[in-house]
Image (cartoon, rainbow, N blue to C red; front, side, top):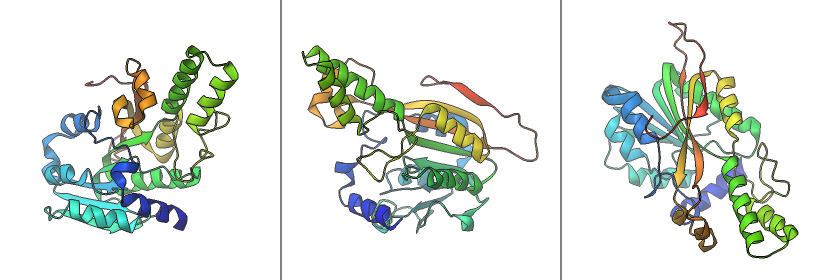
Length: 275
């Protein structure tokens, strides 16, 4: 864990340069629709925890909507920056904590938010964090999460392969460029870390639904967070402006209320925007 903390402490100093945020201008992010339409106006009496709050981009929005906001991150530098973001909101409390062990907060929150923060490279660590997100919630509580999408990386590699072929290169060169871009020599290791990074976990659609279900979540719905091509700051990608945008997974799920007998429900489709 020490190595991951050092990496994210370093990223905190130049977050905007290193991280493509789902809260950037032009991003289609369903989390706002779900806040308004699935949670509604009762939030003034509700509590929320932002797991892996990073530099605190989402904290002002949460602070204006919920009565109690807690933000945690394992990076002291991230929390230091987030403290400045939240300085005008007395209902926000921030803590340096390991998302794999949050026992002090169990069963305390109506809503848990996790925005591209459950991405430690080891699967067991990710499972622990998802389980802790479940444990943080009261019965009937809601998780709103964004998770890096493996399919999006593979789709990007496909586009690069096709463009290289269209440019007259050989199939071997096209495949090599695609492999180099996705950062994975076999294009099949989405369930384990990329070979070129030690900090990023990406999820297949079936995988994220399974891991949420395994932790105990029910009523799982999945949509996409779409990123405009311009946000990637890579001139080579502008050739794909007419293609479908890259995406992350957005998920909404609930912790089963033990006082009722909810039937487990996992949405098999990826819902369209606005549904």
